[in-house]
Length: 230
Image 1 (tube, rainbow, N blue to C red):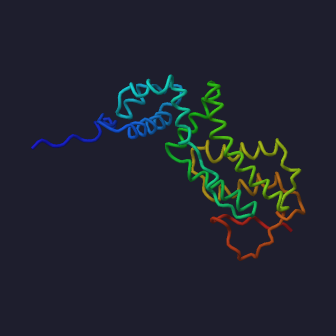
Image 2: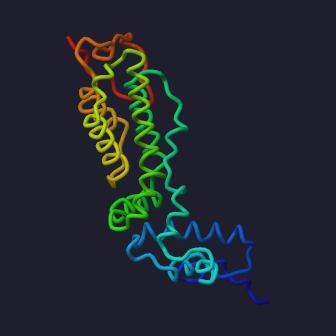
Image 3: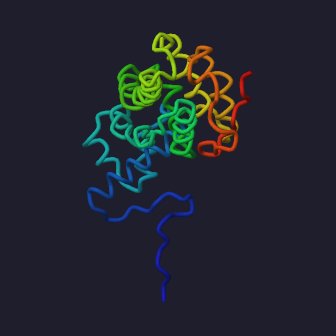
């Protein structure tokens, strides 16, 4: 009896089989993400996507006029979903928590594709505009909301939330959590928050400038308690 053919050839690429429209679209979406991670946007082609997706080029050419439009349509797969993080209501805890949340949702192929697009999108205005609006702005807004909430609670002064300070905060977190190839530990994130981010927004004498919790109180998410100020 002849053996059944494998689902993929020796190169690991899927063999073309008859599939429904939804399955083809999902295969194309997955293939675009994989190609971005492997070859980058500048070398992305319909041919490469079609081969990896195990489909012909026809479905791609019928729906998308070029690779820029193709990538724009799959940008939602690169979202870090910061809105799904449940806040604690404490600035330090939330900065550590939301940063850890971002590192967990942006790993592997997804992180590689993100870095690829971030490095190349500036040469493609249409792609950069959508990448900023769909991917970067939600991340920045989530971080800014954490700081604004802290200001409303009186943990920090709203005067500290200047455009320059916010830009530094955003840039450091994005650089350390999404652009670095080394996996950040909880201690790495805690040190970044305690040594750089909190000093930017906390004024001595404010509620967040000292840690008034009991010494035996547990730290959030396994974070490291900073030294107490004297």
